[in-house]
Length: 116
Length: 108
Image (cartoon, rainbow over the protein chains, first blue to last red):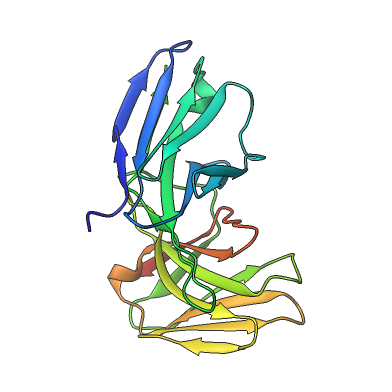
């Protein structure tokens, strides 16, 4: 398996532009997570989906952020309009929780976003 | 790669010595914990897990200890190697809280 795939790996954009980050989870996994990582705040959970349904989006910073999961193999995180303070590394992770088994999340390589 | 967490707590350990990384959690109902390792420029990767019905679990060169009374986890790495240099996070299954982690720095 190729693991969790994220694109693009790097994105540089100007303030006010729309940014779309993409994620393909590991095939068969039914939970998907979006995280943001910065030096100041560490690794923060933004939103997670279970069976394509958003379960907890309390970590989404504000209305400029939105996430969708139209099917089991694809998710997007959109920022519109983007601001310099959105600059961070955004990680997508997926998992297949098993009762009594390992419940680890498998992380993608991340997208480094720079908003000028 | 991405430089993560200049403000992270840092543990500096001599190569070959043992490392102990600590973590506190808040939810007394938590029943499952994971330690992740994040190397520079990469996403976090699973190291070891433990359920609340255990107080110790061992892997290859790593041991996790769980003290439910004080809600404390620790990760012990035996004979620390240069490849152990990374940021280490603890996570709870239900709260999925990672925080800033701890940077492990290996001294030659």
